[in-house]
Length: 331
Image (cartoon, rainbow, N blue to C red; front, side, top):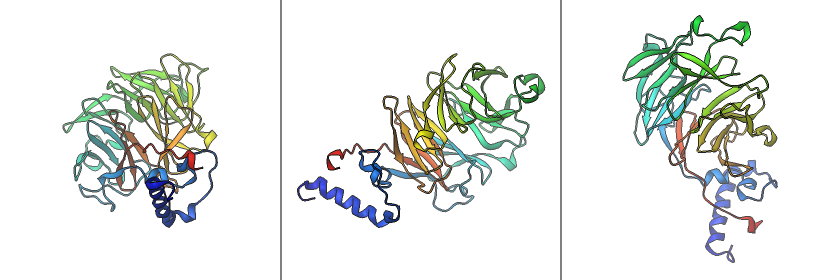
């Protein structure tokens, strides 16, 4: 380290500190010439991250979130996090920098029995949720308005039994348009004037999928986390879709997903880490490892500066981009 000067001393300190907590997880990873991949969790340890919502102890208070639930979810919009706190049955709006959140909806106290398991947030902050009958409602300023009624005349053919079997996931595009995923997770549709317009797949020859979740990009392309094939798909316009990331090839089980421009962030339930696929690079990069034992957790990204938000346990943490730290000359 003496011959490398201050750089070598910093590296030595980093490794010595890491050894104290990760000796049991040491393993040689020769597949990439990057320090982050032969030193466990070093990439995540060097990132700037801090808690922005919730606390280390789960609870029902305004400054707490419930214990981790695999159906909980988060959406970042306009400087605030919208959190579906499934354990406490409530939808919470938590401004970044605030010490507590604002309860927008409590499942036990709303007449429509709206569920916070899945929701979407529009451009003006309107929240969209579903009732037990799979009708979609908008919620803003305490007012609930039904925007799509799940009744026979609005059902579409092409599913089992010839009927639309219900909605299980909601997303809003950057332009504020509402998209839904069906119960079989095999088709994405857009809500337009209380009618459903099929978007993907565009034909019988198109890629089939079982959508764990989906995201709409700035150019209205639809990115889908395919749970059946462990891959990320992209559908643009009238195209049949392409495979953007073959997660199975690198041992990743994709669950949640977020976009920043054309960069894709992927939550890996198998390793409990977050991966990034840059539009101009072929390889994936592990950028955060909040739960190296694995697990399902939710993510979203600030569309402006690319800050990453991770819901895990009873907290939401904000992670900055990893430092530019090259060390090939040391290996």
